[in-house]
Length: 101
Image 1 (cartoon, rainbow, N blue to C red):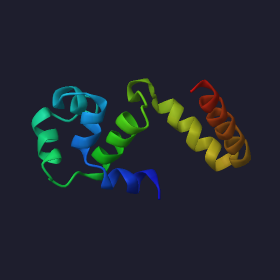
Image 2: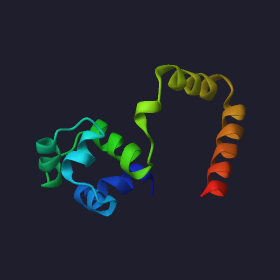
Image 3: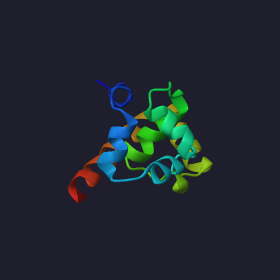
Image 4: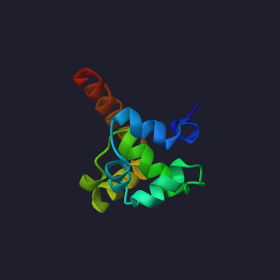
């Protein structure tokens, strides 16, 4: 099961509570108002971009404020033009992250 599928089944309220955040703290990190977040927590359909931001910020723990367009462009270039190098670097980064944890 992929992370995206898993996040669709996890309630945002459950994630927020596990992180110990109030609605304002939780939703503002992904650019959603407290009232909008409250509606999602009450069952309103969450758009895919919001769901993906929730996954990146609150599940994957990525600080999206540090990602720049040029970083994304480098990643996309490497995936398209240097797939083996991309795979090697990705594997190395994951291995290093596991050792640090």
